[in-house]
Amino acid sequence: MVMNHAQFRTAQTQPPRGDDESLARHLEETGNFKILRRLVPRALSPMPDAYTGKIGVILDFETTGLDPKKEEIIEVALVKFRYSGADEIIGVSSVFQSYNEPSMSIPSLVTELTGITNEMVSGQRIDVAALEAFVTDANVVIAHNAGFDRKFAERLSPIFEHKHWACTHTGINWRKNGFGGTKLGHLLADIGYFHNAHRAIDDCHALIEILAHPLPTTACSAFAELMSCARRTTVRVWAQSSPFELKDTLKSRGYRWNDGTDGCPKSWFIDVDEDKRDAELSYLKKEIYQRDVNIECRAVTALDRFSNRG
Image (cartoon, rainbow, N blue to C red; front, side, top):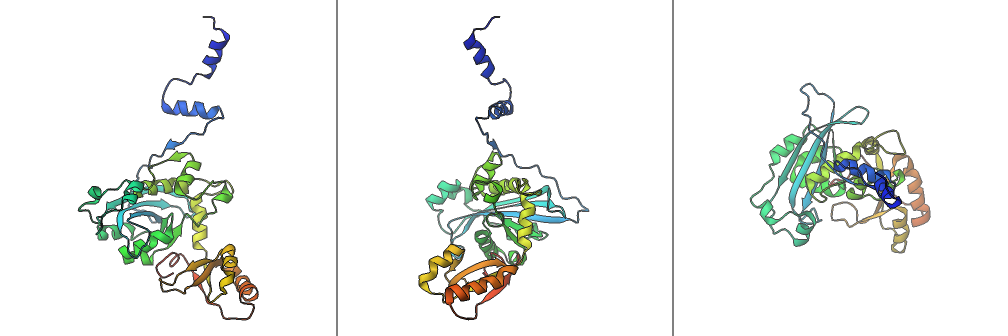
């Protein structure tokens, strides 16, 4: 058969017949498209009987609101995984997921965001004993916003007060590693996937995939970078009674405001690495107070970071 010029060009650009993956690869090879694939959760591989290595748990909550003192959990999900001494994820062992009926109706905005309705949670209760058994052997609990999730977790069970915690939102410099943002959906898209966002179990599976991904600026995974950060001791420095007119100066330096309702000082504060403690105290005395003052500070580790204890 003899083709004219137009037919020849059409044949050249015609996508291949076959499965969706072949079509996706064809589009990617043109250089004009970036394809996002639906995330398929990693297959579970049961914990070996003789396993004596390290165990991590990824945790996520869906709640009726943002205030951990008064809002309630409507879904909890956890994914348990094994990791090596070199901080590499080596297998996903099991999952825990439960709905929970709150004492109030789920706000319509929460249902719009999560898809969780009052009918879905009706009569549902979290089996706290089963949840505690699930996390009891965990070396670390990970959440994408540990400052939020840990406070709800500690209200649910005291077992979370005695666990090491790590936060994937703040514990990795994502932008330095070429990611476009720090939201879970953005991170997942940057490694080529999409998922059902704002559902606890789906977010846990998404976070496993993100953590297993290698970072371009290092020779290790995002999980290894996270664990390196979590193990560091930091120092929380409180700028109590600092001049009000310098609040913007403190904020621009990275200080955050604490309203005092958690039992900690009503004050601006910052977390710095141990070796930067003296420099931060010197800065406050020279630039903020302009005199020698006693400044409260304390060491913070993964055992109490993000907790209700401040």
